[in-house]
Amino acid sequence: MAESTDVKVREVSPGFHLIHLPLPMKPTIVNVYLIDGGSEWALIDTGMSTPESRAAFRAALDQAGCRPEQIRKIICTHHHPDHFGTSRPYRELCRAEVFLHPLEQERVANYLPHPRSEETIRFFERNGVPIESFANVPSLGEFWKDTYAPAEPDHDLADRDRIPVGERAIEVVWTPGHAPGHCVLYFRREKVMVVGDHLLPKITPHVGIFSDQAGDPLGDFLASLRKVEALDVETVLPAHGAVYHDHRKRVTQLLEFHEYRMQAMLDLARGRPRTAYDLALEAFDLAPQSPYQQQFPATFETLAHFEHMRRDGRAEKVETNGRIVWRATPAR
Ligand SMILES: [Zn+2]
Image 1 (cartoon, rainbow, N blue to C red):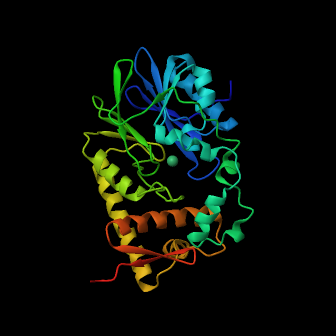
Image 2: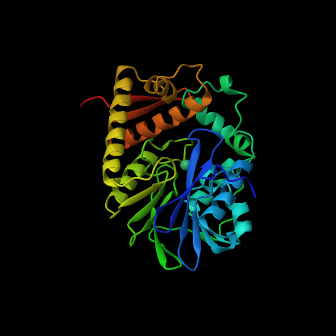
Image 3: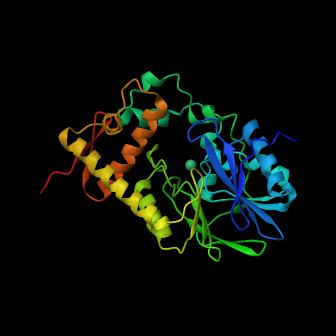
């Protein structure tokens, strides 16, 4: 057994065990949750598939008094590596059934090794990213190849599904935005909500557009915030950061934050219509030499904000010579 001096597991509500698992990047910790349902246990999210994370998980099971085979269900909020990345090894370890929303399942392949596609390169170019400066940047799949071990899910998650965990019941709440099939897991009787990345206490989750088929993820995210706001919740269990209580206050903060950010971005475009990349550098105060890990998500987030404002009539997109430029809708 791994040395367990560093194990971080804590019962944060009766039968709900929070496990801190290490990540090789920021945020540096992901919280996964072990739920004791009496006759069976469930695991919500898995962490990333690194040796450190897997060792920490095994040590945490021991500390929580849970044998792997008692975990009958592995339920993942979304497909990102820190949430779904160890689902295959844990499915084998526990012989548990894996649950994931089908829109997430469709995107698992993005994190498997593959070179950057022509379509992706065109997408970057149209949005003003000087892709030639990033020629040596690995594709998503190349970057994650050693830390992503996704299971083939046994069950689809769907909005309003009820999943028993022993004597408890989980209600699935579909919360698209951060990812299109993101789900929050609500324990109505216990008034506990496991929120994945949807409602984090300190940081805002990335909500971005990184393909031409992305739709309006920011609009989805804002609607998903209002959706969970209605629920009766006393304890919020997030994937990053500390357990907290007032979920409605956090919903209000995030709604206000994105409205403020949209206005600030619109003001930049009003001054000088530009590509999403150029607007992103200014909106996020980034130098052109800043790392791609900052520039790419900033561009994707900027696009999500402008696409949402296009749909509500505040912004317009103009494509000329294969470049998309955003501007504020002129006053009529
Ligand atoms: Zn995520």
